[in-house]
Length: 305
Image 1 (cartoon, rainbow, N blue to C red):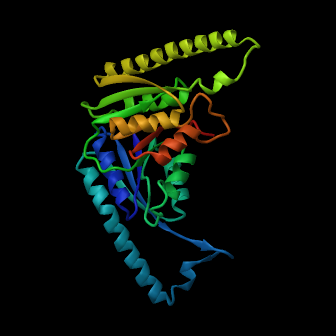
Image 2: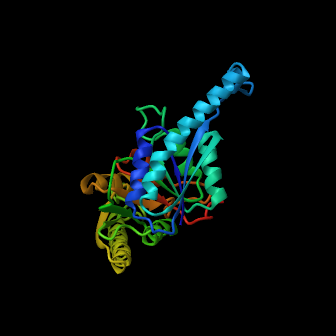
């Protein structure tokens, strides 16, 4: 597996490194630790380097920048090398999200790991600007780190039977997770209450019977779905259990997470209602944005067009 870990000087980058290490990646994993020196362009394509004074002053500034980035990369690199994975570091200059996405594509990364917020992000927003762009446009799976963790003990896996959620499940099974991880497989059925006020026919009793039949069919399908997914995890030796939820999927997934307190929530980039033109489904976006926990958005490499 090839992994790109994007770091800056924020505490969330430390959490990203810790979470990646907690995954117990196999020794053949190749990790590139990347930091991007932002290059901000203003109106008229004016950039800060135009105003850094004399050549000597620019040289001093460049040296200071190199020393700072070297120190920034040292911690994550040393921590991951202790896990006996192959690690290299890289410094780029430019727009952070673009550089992260370009490097991930260039190296063929299967996973991008990044803090949910970065240096300079407003505390008012639950998800940073760079993280939002990366999770939306990446071709690889993306892990958004939020909490400090030294081990992955509980994982909440949300599935709806789509190929996208199956990609998230497959990614976790291939990773693999630490052997003692406890997996909770959940699926959310849409609430039927709004449908009760819409008449399929002109006969109220007939409408009620249709809705009962539809609900029973969906409940049966939901049980089959979570049971089959649970079986896949148990075959790999994980302790796994299931929950069938009822309501708006993102809200139900977030609510289940608050109850279960997982170290990681995993779900597909899009669901059954995903439209091919959309890069990221609404459920994945809402869970990633409002979750208090780290979130893994699963994608098959090269899936995105």
